[in-house]
Amino acid sequence: MSEHEYVPKSKAAKWFNDRLPLLTLGAHLTDYPTPKNLNYWWTFGGILTFCLITQIVTGIVLAMHYVAHADLAFASVEHIMRDVNYGWLIRYIHSNGASMFFLAVYIHIFRSLFYGSYKSPREVIWIIGLMIYLLMMAAAFMGYVLPWGQMSFWGATVITNLFSAIPLVGDSITTWLWGAYSVDNPTLNRFFSLHYLIPFLILGLVVLHIWALHIPGNNNPVGIDIKKPSKDTVPFHPYITIKDAFALLVFMIIFAGFVFFTPNVLGHSDNYIPANPLVTPAHIVPEWYLLPFYAILRSVPDKLGGVILMFSAIFILFVLPWLDTSKVRSAVFRPIYRQFFWILVIDVLMLGYVGAMPAEGIYLVLARVGTIYYFLHFIVVMPVVGYLEKTDPIPMSISEPVLTGGAEPSLARKGNDKV
Image 1 (cartoon, rainbow, N blue to C red):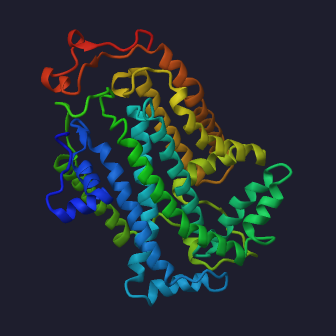
Image 2 (tube, rainbow, N blue to C red):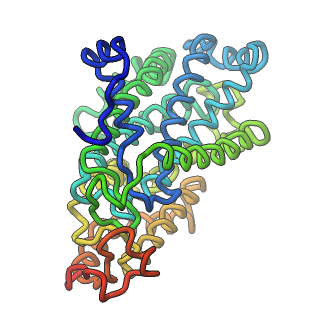
Image 3 (cartoon, rainbow, N blue to C red):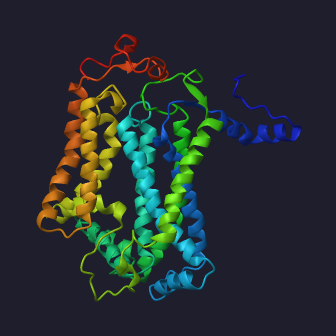
């Protein structure tokens, strides 16, 4: 019997656990051997779970008062803000919660890119995580449409029209999405239904994501495999739970700052104007967390080409574990790749900025340059650098840098000579 195996104390607990081993599962989660060198970048998994639960709970409450009808949706949102007890708070938590959710998921993704958490044997974990990300974007887009303001209506019109670029079947798909021949009441009903459903699909994938994580175990900043349990691990509780709780508290303070002091700073003022199909806003933009992909979409003059590039920018991440040729996971020991990683971060931030600007002049040039580098990073830079780069010495264990004051070449095994 493993030292971490839970044994029920009472007859009732044993009876229940023999039929549904939830108690054993709970003990496994608390005693789960976790690398002891995890830094605060690893706390965003727990923060993302908090964000998802917050969105589901507030979304259910909002759905009790929201009316999914083109003539009543805008007024129902104002009713929630003005007449429902603490409706303003619930709505601001939900709307800003979407931004906090994406902020946390982007940090989570870039942490994985830096420390190589997508590499073998964690490819399935990475792919499930990207599926969650895709569903998040779908839910966020549909949720943005629900207030039925000017930006909601025209954002839905622009994005759904992209499907019309698909040869032969594009117009049929667009009409099916609309439920009519333009964005109207059937579109709003469909989006509301799907916006309510998708978070529960995300929740199911999160369970799979955590389950898949517990098979190979956590990656760590050093990026080397560890044996569980060993001197390199600690029980998940209380060590990691206390660390996650502190990080979550700091995150909640930042979250509360947006909700109580600048609740509309991440939104668009045009969405406080009722939807008007006869008046086009001067500049149609999606929410900030979709702006990099919007910039890629607009960087191509051809509509179909822009759509293909935009979706390719997401789907290229699915094959990332096979594009990276380096045998060393962590960028801590990859001096050349580390520089290209920060160039990618700057590139994505630039794409987000130009995505919010008009598609003209210098902004269009920057969008095209940013798009070219984005794809070159994954298709050219990662395979070539991974093959040619000479990595720094890697410690034999995660305890070694602490005990020796650093990874000494005499005490470390080196990475592949070619990488």
